[in-house]
Length: 199
Image (tube, rainbow, N blue to C red):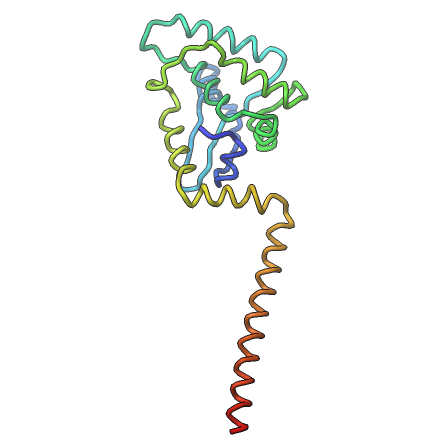
């Protein structure tokens, strides 16, 4: 699956889902942690907010170690969640995007530390891609990102429209080109009209 930066470049909006205070603790845990959704119509990938602090890595490692020893066929929510988030995070720029969209609440203070933590968490972890909890979401996101139009749009945005001034400059150049074409057309029409009057 593409990283957070690549997803946003491909037109997918990353949104956070705040916890619902009226839920019971057991329901809230599953809903808050694992309630990731993707809406193909609005191109919104909604991920519950994750608070990352000094104890997050230890907590995830313990849950993931526990899930590694579950009987075959049992769902491994924590492993799949960490793999999903790890797919979104390749660089500190990805963490920055997730932080700015409210998906990650970084109490470590350093985006690079969060990047390294998630990239290390999946080392030596066994998971079955066929029973991956987020398979449907990952497939929908991948299908969106693999469409030619979205690839072209992402490349165009990354290479040419990476600053706010780029679209304005492009529009100004386009207007100038159109005005030049109009001036050329009117000059040719004026010349032809003048030639007809001379004969």
